[in-house]
Image (cartoon, rainbow, N blue to C red; front, side):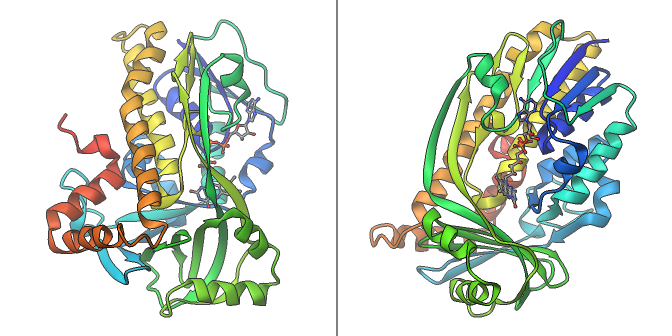
Amino acid sequence: MPQAQVLGAGPTGSLAALALAQAGWRVQLDDPLTAEALANRSRAYALTHSSRALLEQLGLWSALLPHLAPFRRLELCDRATGDQISFTGADLPRSSPRATDPAVGWILQHQPWMQVLLQALHQQPAVALQLGDAAQRRSGMDLVVAADGHRSPCRQAAGLRHWSRPYRQGCLTVQVGLRGSAPDQAWELFRPQGPFAVLPLGGQAFQLVWSAPLAELRRLEQLEPVAFLEALTTALPETLQPEVLLDQPRAFPLALELAWPLHRGPVVLVGETAHRSHPVGGQGLNLCWRDVQALHQLAQRVVAGRLAARRLPRRYARRRGLDIVMVLLATDALVRLFSNRNPLLLPLRRWALAALGRWPVLRRLSLGAMTLGPCGLLPR
Ligand SMILES: Cc1cc2nc3c(=O)[nH]c(=O)nc-3n(C[C@H](O)[C@H](O)[C@H](O)COP(=O)(O)OP(=O)(O)OC[C@H]3O[C@@H](n4cnc5c(N)ncnc54)[C@H](O)[C@@H]3O)c2cc1C
């Protein structure tokens, strides 16, 4: 049985460990954090159809269903021009199963996600979990999966290059009670200060992902709840009325990051160890999980005797490069195009949104690239 060590039990590393074990590998999963600390984060992720396909394949989807908030409509608004278009399940590409579930995407909170995932890992006999202790890289492994986050000690020890460019914009996340939006409606608001996502959590609860200059977000983070809600009201369109704070606002810096190459010897980089993007369009974690999907497929080929284990890292890196680079470039281009009031760019933005509104084929292509990844649209 081939053996792997996964360093880092965040959302990517834990899923990678489960995927490898289900492919027939013996897996050691290490993280210095305890299970409680790993689960105890107030975050919510927007899942696309590429993530749904992987979670179904790994048998996690049905356990997650009670915790998923689907959105069946995505409103895209350019706040500088006042233009707005909607995406619905009818705009999904034909290769995604829109007949069975017309959701454009789903919102999943971190806590129930990690609880379901850690429980599945505990029930998997091929996984040895070592949580809460300083992790050491073990020798004699066929594969070492570095999923230890964007500062990755494992990547540094392997001598892999890492390119990082901080954004002037930071990101503030917070959960609020809000009126004026349907419970299955999500919003991506392009404001001159930065993109602002409003994501449904069920009922009148919404997760906000607010991008703006980091110094401004740090100031907002310190405000009393009433003052914060007032600031929020001025940032949102009049139709969306925030009523109550449901958790503590948290601001953090953003950066565009890429490690290269994605492998050395038995080490492969996955998730934020390999790449980090702006949260616009909710691409980050879905991109991380497409790394896991590629790893899963290659690990199955090793067990079936169709790929030598020592060749897996190079094959993985070749398979992932294009998708990662295209998502990093596309999210960066969206931020540059929409985070301003540049009079030279406004006509281009108006034209782009009008074209998307008029031609369903363009909506299908752009939603397809978002939900399956840019490479998911290529013929197989
Ligand atoms: C404050 C904050 C809020 C966020 N909110 C959202 C949100 O609301 N929605 C969203 O989509 N995204 C959000 N993000 C981004 C999201 O958290 C990441 O996309 C996601 O966590 C990436 O998962 P990962 O498993 O690749 O990396 P991580 O989650 O960073 O996991 C890395 C793991 O490696 C472990 N580790 C570190 N060193 C070692 C070592 N030496 N050996 C072994 N393990 C090690 C760490 O303990 C950690 O568990 C947020 C990020 C931050 C910082």
